Image (cartoon, rainbow, N blue to C red; front, side, top):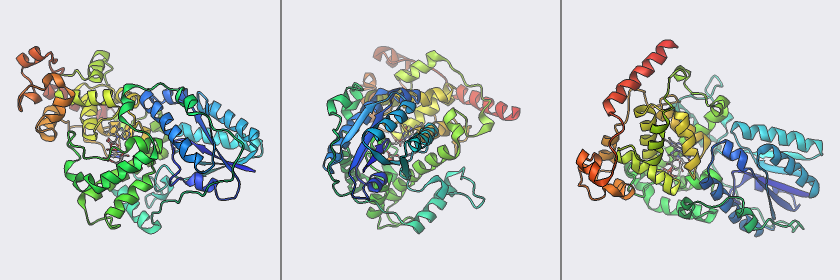
Length: 472
Ligand code: FAD
């Protein structure tokens, strides 16, 4: 008998619960992967992330080969056809048990129910493990067995639970008995999605992810609280692309941070505790997307904001996308995203708030654009971040608090280094002018005039939110 492991967003052999479960008996193990580009594109995932997924799959294939596990990867357009292929492969390779790590988003859950039903028809079973978050959404509920809607009490309950359950990573499985199955070639896998320029900035694979984690926890993590908001410094881990494809587990990240803090949850290094806090934000948004499946269908988390008459001005939207708003920090962030497929967190907040509050454009458009461009596109974190910025979400920025992009630049890019790098036409301007060039400087450098007046936009957004709430 052969067991199968079905890889999805968990492209690693390290600390992989489904792989360990598949390797418990002495049977050989075969790995399956279905690349579903049409499905991913429906979720707005763009080429940068799709290509990164395939590059990580090739790394995984090499790692699996060391364990005598062949990787059979097939092109499957959407989730429906991936289930049909899974069934076919199980019959072909005489697989009775499939192991997979569960995914908590809506379409992924529907696919997994369908897979369970289809495999049952041929006498095979599928067994799911918990992996995407450290604690499962059912583990963190209020006294009334309801999901938390606010981060701070969620975090308190999360820490209390983990202190009880403990946190461990899993060992590597031992090498499996050999099978006759043949792995799909790297050339074939990579032929499914051409690279775009942004991919050159991100080396794929678990080894690279661990290298980054170790380097970060040995150096920048101590300064994380003080430096993480400054985009010109390399002060954050840049692990998000690896977490998004599962080249590293969130448990490994949390454990490494805790180890560096002597397993203290509320004392020790403030830098480490702040980083741990961000990993818990990741858990919070994933739990919300599981508890509130309507979010996946575009619903505002805060129903009271559902009547906001957002704009869909495509000319304004295009200028925002291209980094031509006339606000240097906003443009620098958008150009960073368009070039390397990643944007610093402070700038994700600044650019998202600019789109929704200054241009008053529907946050769904920005959410989709980020997914198309981000190498770390993650439905829950992206939706959470956009709804936070648009003041429609859980624990949102209050609608009357609107970032002034010029003040944000003065505060978080005080020397203008980040702007100089990403908006090179302004690189010769002095320390003050760089944040808000005058009309003459704009004309001579070819940099556009500002699209909107900050104060007028803030007034407009306040009125719109007040009216929507009054209509409710
Ligand atoms: P670090 O600062 O080193 O943090 C470590 C890890 O913690 C991150 O890799 C990430 O997994 C998690 N994390 C950190 N901050 C957050 C947060 N606010 N919410 C949820 N998880 C967090 N993150 C994504 O992974 N994918 C997205 O698609 C995404 N879209 C976003 C959209 C908007 C509008 C906003 C405001 C934030 C978004 N984030 C997203 C969250 C955050 O910006 C990124 O996780 C972070 O910038 C990644 O860089 P890093 O790995 O260096 O993070």
